[in-house]
Length: 151
Image (cartoon, rainbow, N blue to C red; front, side, top):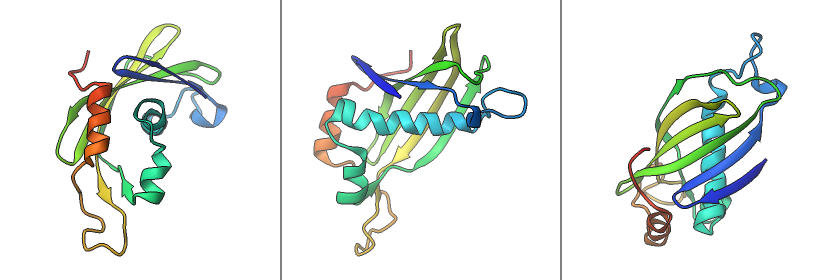
């Protein structure tokens, strides 16, 4: 697994493993939602300067997906090298909307979107399990990364 960066786009390269595929030999469609989440987790340290685990374990903030969707254009198969491109397309009070593109050697294969909310994970807090405002420092770093429409 490798990561690379460009202005406003986070890229995560992955090799399709045997376990990612269904009996037809192509990536089983729910695996792409996991790939999207992997891209989001690696985006934190690559562009925001925070480890994803710092938010979950130390700051007690989670980022669960409350909506996700994908459109499949071409299959990906065992042994393929794919690259997931992540962009932030909207930043709400307590939510972040991501757009994803999955590319292979033959071009774009999958597009997708997800909306994640910032959730209080502190079991001692009266707001446990509730959506909370994006912390100011995180918001500033996301805005510096770039928020814009899908391309």
